[in-house]
Image 1 (cartoon, rainbow, N blue to C red):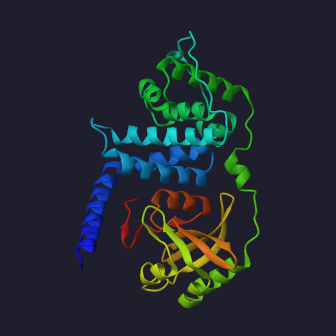
Image 2 (tube, one colour):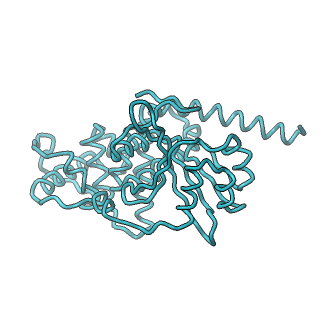
Image 3 (tube, rainbow, N blue to C red):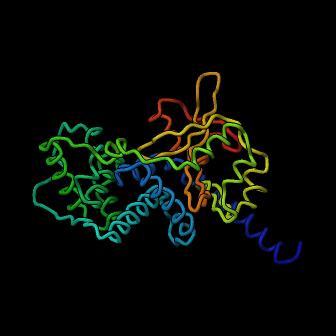
Length: 315
């Protein structure tokens, strides 16, 4: 091993140490953060993308902070502003928050919160949605919310009051998630061939369908940038040997890998692929995404596999 390779190995080891430390810092906040991202965007898939981007941004910037930082507040701040910036790039109206003279602290209501969350993102602007979720669902104070969404506590109170009144006075409508559940997209024939090879444990058959330059991403786990890297890395010990099924999950066609345990089927992995020129050019796995797999298992009426190498997740 030459000096350059030694330096790269040393850097990789330091990165793994920092990542382990960071994961410990945010562990207690991840479940709530994923739910926040889901409701903020109005979609489990968009929420998952936002969650991933938030964690990656937070990991890259947390150690640049000069002052003691609350990890939970920091994560929600990054998620909120990342989503608002995304909406701005799409030329969406992100909303204004104005104060009012009525003291909102004393406002009481009998709002059905579960019903409200189903269509919150479709009815209100991104900033309004963020304020409502942070204040009413995730129990941040008005002062904390004001700091996260860059407004004043008075505007936070006023926004929440107006939103509650509007939610109570207007009939419910289908939210984005409900609409997604009705969407159906044609399955590419190559994906059906890939599914067959998976179920037959045909590793070479799987590799034959993958482009030499394919990108394989196991979200928040690892990335591989060619078929050779996949062959010598994630697939060096073959296929898992579990049952694979095509499922429509929150409006997206995906492959769900089931482990048939003694107590029933458990979700081992969820993956989807992109195909161009008769080859799989992108493969994404959610093997390491505890929060997504738990939500997907609930949606599909089964259990997530909580103990799988190298992951052992507490219930």
